[in-house]
Image 1 (cartoon, one colour):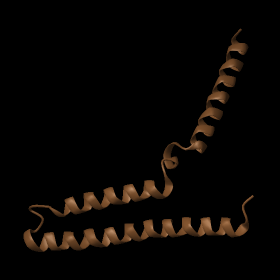
Image 2 (cartoon, one colour; image 1 turned 60 degrees about the vertical axis):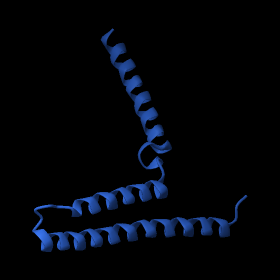
Image 3 (cartoon, helix red, strand yellow; image 1 turned 120 degrees about the vertical axis):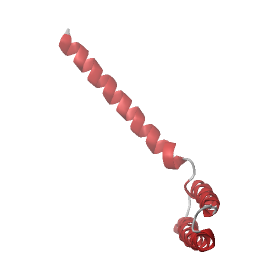
Image 4 (cartoon, one colour; image 1 turned 135 degrees about the vertical axis):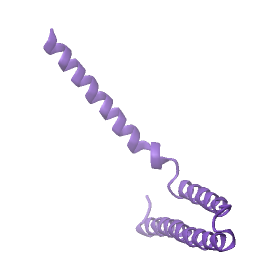
Amino acid sequence: METNQEKYLRALDRVKQIKKLYSKIINSLILVALIAGVNYYVNELRNPWFLWVAGFSFLGIVIETFKVYGTSLFLGKGWERRKIKEQMEKEDQDTKTNFIRK
């Protein structure tokens, strides 16, 4: 059985991971804005090379998000439970509809 101290430490670690993700998002936005400003100053966006920086920053954010939240963010157990319940309710509804038609 785990103690409150262990739960607290695990929760603290999770909060630190989420804070790191948010910091990375803010830093990426600032970096991309600065690079876009330099790109505009140099060639008035005729050659928008700052989009490469934006793309790789976005990729880094996506990777960090999967590290923090895992794949359960999209197709986790909660999603499975909801879909199973939805399918069972649909089947019950179909059964009731077929019974009424007969």
